[in-house]
Image (tube, rainbow, N blue to C red; front, side):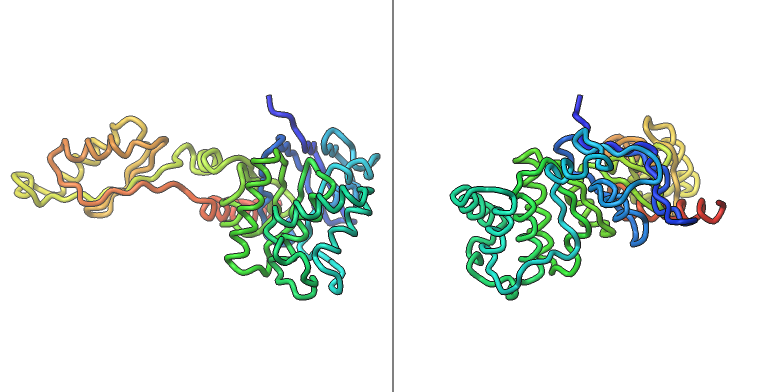
Amino acid sequence: MSENIIELVDLTKKYGDFTAVDHLHLTISKGEVFGLLGPNGAGKSTTILMLLGLTEPTSGVVRVCGIDPVTNPIEVKKKVGYLPEDVGFYYYMTGWENLMFTARLNMLSGKEANEKVNYLLERVGLKDAASKKTGKYSRGMLQRLGLAEVLIKAPEVIILDEPTLGIDPTGVLEFLQLIVRLSREDGLTVLFSSHDLHQVQKVCDRVGIFVGGKLLAQGDLKSLSEQLFEGNPYVIEAGVSFNSGEIAHANSEKLTEWITGILKNTDGVRNVIREKELFRIECSKDITTAIAAAITGAGAGLYYLNRKEYGLDEIYHRYFEKGLINERKG
């Protein structure tokens, strides 16, 4: 069974009458990359502050690596690396000097610090910029240097709070690839807080959708699709032709109804929506081959076949809409 590195039970944070985090339940396993996805103001950063012991919860339980950050904030900080949206460095110092400063603050000896700094600069792709002053670094370079700084103390958990804002697309891709590599190679647990759907989808094993202080859903894309779309996570679109052979002379409306009936009786099909010659088939599993066989077996032509899975974009916006509706009802 996977070891839970982060455990949140009924976690709540209130500021007066305002509830920033509302009865949050969440577990994150060792080595997992978990995406905390939600709009600005959803409560993501407040949750992170509670994980780091920088603010106390109003109620509920927080455990990070088995430690309570409320009673042992220093111990938690020894095990957790935190990369905020904006990383601060001494701009008149080089990348190497900044990391050496951090290494010495973490009580590494001169030789050990030197070896680790050089290793991490190479790991994050900044070896050639090591002697360059950080005031000349791009935002993407600063974030990678920030990641190297986080890794100085060999943390068990890395928390990233909107780490790619303001970085160009190439820099974002390189940063995300680095995060995945670190998690896979070093077994690091990563909490990635973001409002960017596509970035979260690229790197995360599971996603939690956070709206209005509440975690509306969590899971991988497949399980979220199944929860949201009532067991119909796949949609297969089929373009059917009635213009070949003897079938071309038959009543096309009756043929269309006949094929609709055949599709509905195919195992795994939950619903069939027909728009002229295009069939949109909602399925509980991938039965693309069976659908193609059913159509051609009925004597019709098949000129288009496409399997579509619900992406995080559709999933998130559907949950977001549900969250707003529930807020209005409340």
